[in-house]
Length: 360
Ligand code: NAD
Ligand code: ZN
Image (cartoon, rainbow, N blue to C red; front, top):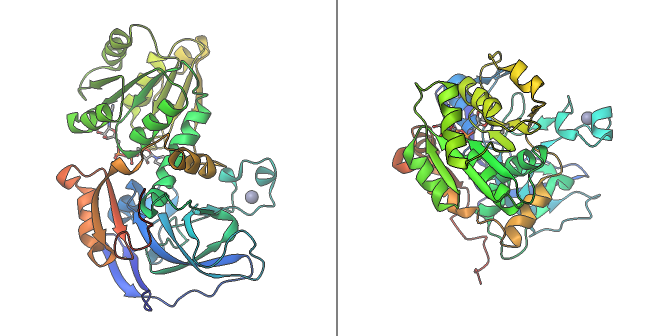
């Protein structure tokens, strides 16, 4: 185990540095984690390129990274659920646990949420990181550290499908075949959806979706009208989908999602784009199409872990590239420009697979 605390710190736009940071001191409810695997998310790249996402603005250097797993190196005196040596996935946000939303169980909406690599809070692309023990999920022996890290985006997919009430026989339209669209596809399949059409503007991404089991894929042309896109979708699915999950974050895709969905159906918007967009609200109202938001996840980590541990979802196939923490700059470049068909880029804080048991 390394004794240094090499850490990836974002100092500002286009200024990501590797530097030493002190090893954190834990409190009674926390664990110290020797970090193992950290995936790069679109939001990490966005902070690198823009220094902000919406009203989350960087005003000081921030440790990057939040899709992560590691090994417990030390436990606080109150910790009962973990022991030193446990391999854990880290749910990267923890709420106040006191407010009305937390009491109602909607802790993802807590105004005092501390979330890794969301300003002003540090992330965990570092060798040693501390976290509340009750937001760490012990991985069974056969689940790898990479899979543990991937529970983060997978939990977004679980939350989106739960918000959409996907169930047995659902006909689901997913817009966008980026990492989030793809995890949503995997979860929708596992929840019983029998027909899934996924769209994108890039054929390579659709090829991946097809390999992952999408019933249909549709390459859209960015210049087509929403009406034309809707027609293409209905032609392929032979009738309107009852669920649409927008994983793009652009106005056109949300418009298409609303127009395409069957009357009485549900549109879930996961993609986050411009703060103000033009949507066909009357169409949604007059046909009782519910439009629902998604903010990260809430009580979804254990479900995501169960899906992976029981072999219901093969999440590791989304990882296309691996880098050592010392190659963080290259890893970000690969993710940012989609080099080599990059989908999910994984950074290894420890040499790859050293904390993984032999697969059987
Ligand atoms: P991504 O950029 O890798 O993928 C988006 C995909 O959508 C791309 O493949 C792109 O080609 C495709 N696309 C763009 N416009 C399209 C259109 N009109 N029709 C069809 N496809 C189109 O991003 P990602 O990492 O997969 O994340 C997707 C979105 O989800 C982002 O907006 C991200 O901010 C958001 N997100 C939201 C949450 C949340 O809690 N709500 C969590 C994670 C990510
Ligand atoms: Zn709260």
